[in-house]
Length: 253
Image (cartoon, rainbow, N blue to C red; front, side):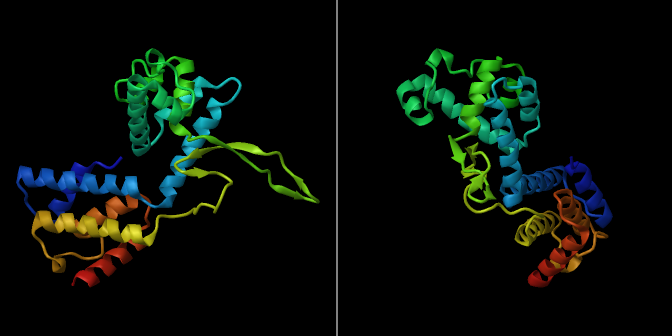
């Protein structure tokens, strides 16, 4: 976990820059917003990780004897953006079930009556609710919120006209594993790095009133240390960050 306040103080100290309490708070808040924005909109790698985590939970819920303890533990480890998405749909499910049972049945399939929405005791924090929710309520709710239906995927060809057994896969975040184009794997994209660096540099220049000429691509300056620390924290290598920073400075100069 990156201590944004400590990082901002260290970067400012390196430059000998002084900010008022309000200006410092604004800088910290903006850095945190930039990181959050990247984490919630980062490229396909993030979406794939989220889908894999949700798929693992969904498959456990459809077992003959779902391992409730394991499901609770996996939910507790889900990234914050994924949890917020689940909570969004949980609010919709609860509201629709109470306000219009028939409409909810058309959207979700078999929906319990309003007094048994299976979200009893839910107060906006899905992680907290999942820790103590009754097992049957947890299993039903997780299945309803995570998966948007299930699909039978044809087994892989084994040659001579034979195939492995078909499998059931959930549709999660608009995709079904084994259906359609394969997902990209690997490191975050250069475009994402360029955008992240540009936002961090802009935040620094705005707060300190420095110009492009005052910063460099290395991590030996306040701005450089800020950019390198944040970008390496989210998975980029130091050489990648240095190159992206040098390119941006050239574009801005």
